[in-house]
Image (cartoon, rainbow, N blue to C red):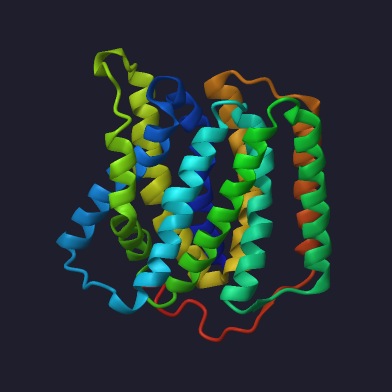
Length: 295
């Protein structure tokens, strides 16, 4: 289980910079490039990876891989990029704290993982805290909060389905094939929203784009899906509560966003609720967790 947590933690750290990096690139490149363009760029690298390793086409997993792609390649990147045009990354990080709970719920159904009542009580408490936080801090920017809720739903499905597939095929191949299969949609959107004058895009924005494309959208998933496959979707996904603190720190450092007492209080209450829930021992009804994850 320790290996699973370490892999999950590496993936989480990779994801923690996603919102600040997206907000760094949004003003110059726009949400369509930061959301869909990053998927298109990552898909090119993923295709090269699959070709170099001579990976066979996973015919029997195509539908599931498309579901993964729609969730974590199309849905989450685009919705979160759109939301961050009207919402600070720090606020977005707290709303996205719902993601581990949503992932656990989807994983319980798709990966047949069983959680005790105490886990769901903690999940409900944390969800309530996030909802109140969003209502209190969203103000006139209610639509970004709704976009982030959609991003949470999309990512939860993509995480749970990808974690399930990573027990049957190499974890890195899951995100690579998902990227390749949905790349036509990403390429189509990105191609129609290219910058009019490339020279006006600052280096800072291109660096942010490079990170979300190669770090968030590709490399972090190599570790993340391996961790989910080894330790179970519901269990390992809970490491993402630490991501909330990491993202708040990145936002303060890179974007100069002030950390308010509401941010700190919401973060402590959410993570505290889940920590209590983790005291209830998780069990799984699925045999063979980790099969295929070490490939």
